[in-house]
Image (cartoon, rainbow over all chains, first blue to last red; front, side, top):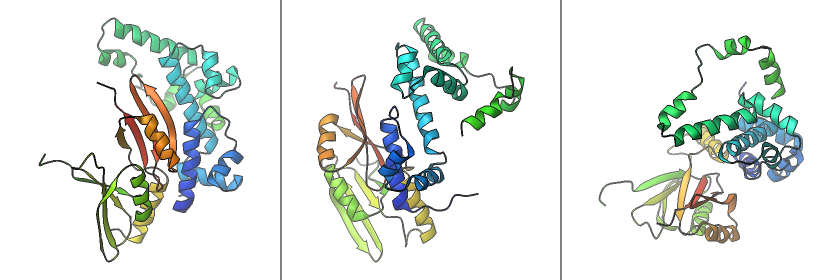
Length: 163
Length: 135
């Protein structure tokens, strides 16, 4: 079903809440706080945000946090625990689990791969080759890939959890 | 220069509001001509006399009302393409426009010698403000 047409004036205020999450994704953004930014009620906010931007606000925030954590893992030497707390998680376990659910690899794996790539690059291997090495081998469908993985039903649980 | 881009247009929800906003960034009205419902409005930065930024309101007679409504929604959602404003001092400019009530969406960040920040116009157009590396 196509979401109802929202009033541009309301959309502009919802965008303000999205901007605020972008600017400080490590902060806690309960619906009430976001709703205040957009000057609407909490219930109205959650529904309108999803209609406007296609994802519920908390899931949008999660993607921004994961994105930032992934960048810090790749670009800095900071300990994973520090990165987890710095990007808005209060538990390392939750961070690791959600990160793996979304990215498909653990934070440690992402870091190790980034380091290996840097070493290759430093060794003088051309950048295009370095990136080709990392190209995912998607010669079967994503669904099939998921089915063949040990504990292959995990994907379904994952999509439910990420709601 | 005799060939190149002369005008790039932005959609704005209200042209008068847009003039006061872009004046805060240092632009001045270049052309403001009305013909019935239609208003051709461009602004120019004094340091860039070969370029005009068009500020256009979606609506009749150019767009039918239904299309205009869609454009207004896209604009308000911040889904229009990115814009870049180049400055000599990003932090100073940010403070200057913040004092005038401009919404800073991203505080200035240093990135390997360049400094960038983000802000939005009242309609929802998103700008990056970039201070180039000193050469």
